Structure formats: C-alpha cells, structure tokens
Image 1 (cartoon, rainbow, N blue to C red):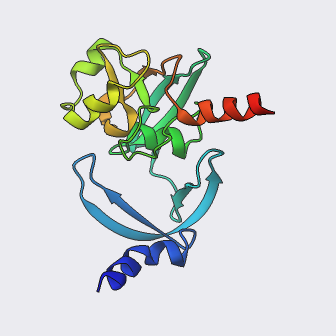
Image 2 (image 1 turned 90 degrees about the horizontal axis):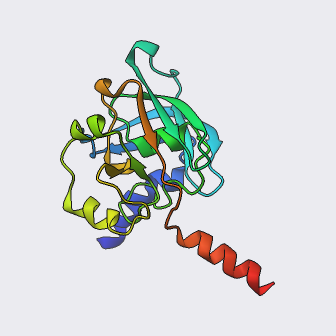
Length: 184
C-alpha cells in the first residue's frame, strides 16, 4: 500500500518533466494541480530544476508585471512576471544573475532568497508566517523590510517594484566550496 502511494507520487518524475509539467501552487492562495505540455527551456547551474514554459507560449504582456532586482554587485536586473508567481520563481525562471538565490528551491528551508523591500512596498505585503520569520532569523543583513522571495507572490500592484538582494548570504554550499579549495 505504501509502495503504491510512493510510486504514484513519483510517477511524474519517472515519466520525465520534459514531457509534461506538474505544478502545485499554494503560496499565493491558489491550490491547484494541472498538467500541460511543456518544453525544457534552460537549466540553472546550481539546481537540477529545469525552467518549464507552456507550449502555448508566454502570457500576454498586459498580464505581466515588471520587477527590478538589485543584485549583490549593485547591478539592476529587470524581469517580467505573471501575477501569482513567487519572487523566487521569477528569479529562477528568468535565470537572473543572482548567485546562490533559492538554494532550497522554495521549500522554506534556507534564507538564500532573502530580499529587502522599500518601506512602502513592504507595508502592502501579505502577513508574514512564523516559519518565514524563523528562516529570516538566519539571514545575513536582516532589515525591518526583509522577506523571503519564495514567500512573496507577485500582484499587479507590484508593477515597477525594486528589490535589493543583501550583499552577504548564508549559503552552506559556499562554505563547502571554500573548504574543498583550501584542502587542495
């Protein structure tokens, strides 16, 4: 019985995500599962997650919101996003140059998607959960307007929003890489 349940959960992975995409959306108040034909577009260097795009193409530009990210080097990166996407999904799907962003892939197990909002924008965000607060306690460069990108979903009112990525990040993978280099 347990084996049947596990194989049912693993079936989409075993069948290959390049043939179809399965999406569960629950962060932004939408709880649905749907499968649509998809094609593989690009692969993130630090993740095994592939960007998937609907075969029908991207949404109309009228349904899109423009968001600006200032990365750790001070470079401004501009992206367009669909309403309901998390900020983490925007960075990953558009392959923005923000090193190490979203190491846990949105499972609320790290703080690498830590973003700093402008005060006015921060006050308009949905309430923060206790779990997110716990992860933010581990973040470097924490401010009064800090949030995790995996927990903030795009709304039309965010059009033109500018977010800052903290200069420092707590990413264990970096420490492991430094350790490997020092042993050589």
